[in-house]
Length: 132
Image (cartoon, rainbow, N blue to C red; front, side, top):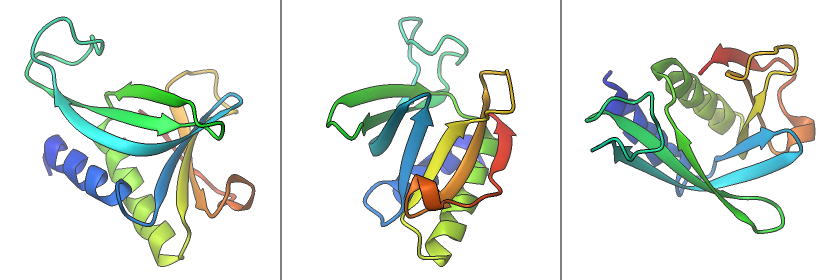
């Protein structure tokens, strides 16, 4: 499946559906409410590693205090596939959120964990580890 199709499927599943994506980094928890697929058209784009003409994701999320964050992502096909698999598992188990959090066992900045459940404390104890 092409990356753009994975992005579209990801966007459809996590916007307006019953399962929400939560991004947790350090002490901040952000609930994603908007996902856009964007195309890099020139070198003014903040995602430097994306070649001109390629697509990336723009997420808008809020923290518990209502502050909004804008997140630009160049996620791998593997991460998008893992998120889609986690979405299916969470939905089948009737859980309401998937949380991405930095892997505490890794010193690398691009290693995240995926967990799912109804809240962070109750989420799955065996998260999926991957490199984005």
